[in-house]
Image (cartoon, rainbow, N blue to C red; front, side, top):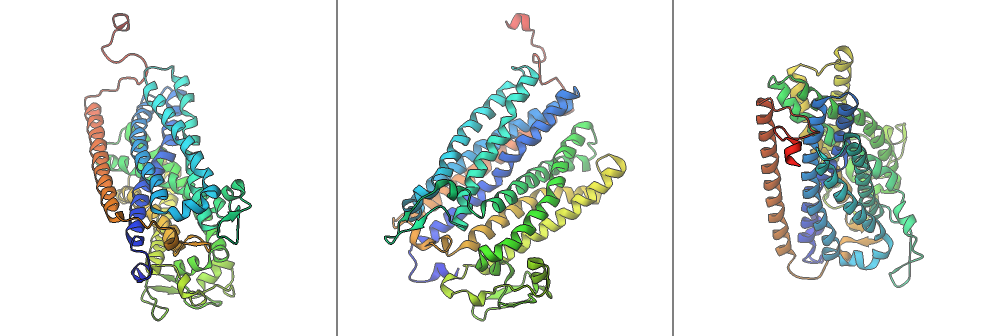
Length: 465
């Protein structure tokens, strides 16, 4: 909280940052479901149509209802986020709106297209021919990816700004919106977050069916409900390791101060140890506690213990990332969870390869249940590293966050309103999801396995017409 408490900082900075953090942390929970759940839904849909499998079709239909709900909640929280960019950070949008505004326009178009397609897809059950219905759903994941791409592009631009030259009057000139979109951090951030969405959605959905499997509901419905999302997540996990490792080698060059904070590298030099957790003291530039593995950080960065890594001592005190302990702990939590998920994915691959069945070990099922919320925690931690690690810059090395914040009063009020809004949205979402689950369980117990296409049970088409 060092920079928040400095007396020369605007009074609006603290509540503005808290409101932005609250919005991002709430919204990001729904992004993986909005992006990856439609893919899981279409996999089940295709399997159901190709093999005439009513259980897979039932899963696809139920997942489409969850996707519709999470899309709606994500749209509300995302809209709030868009307004906050202008209201809380007028210095950013006023100066750089022409540079990085295009991704937000693309995101708006993607949002409307996705809303229309999701509505058509949900409405199409029982009303469209099966394969026509499936084909109409195919664009949904790609439109969702387009929306995610545009937001990640804007965020990565804030980390590695490109596509302009700063004029002597403090305004950008020679603006190239395409170069701003395709900025240096985009490939790394987009790949990393894309894989994270499939891991989070896959492990989260699978964890629901793992609960049923653990309780003895070992029917085909729970088997498919577990295998489809868990397999997708298990495939994405090793790819995420490669993506994360690639970013870790690129970041010391692109954002050395952020990397030093993530790894709490206190003194520049070679033979840097890898420090897990521990507590950084900014007054003495030292770390106490934690686990230190000699030379590992230098080896991970450059494949050699002789690799030079810049330390926090080389960063100007005014440019040090704020809340270094938060950045470091968030990074370590993300990496620790990813490592555990990697072990779980390999464990699953070995067991499934042997028996072609959902692993029945209670230990495995408990781990699978825990994987869902842990992956969401990893996604949250990753965003904390990205956002807090960039501070005190809102545009890295170009504009400080304190220069962009609004000078209007009432930010504490808007923070309170947004907090109450998200509290209401969270309670409403949980209530609706629980109601859905209860209704589906009752239908399963009543053996209501009516086909998802054709007339509803008891409806005579001739009389209905």
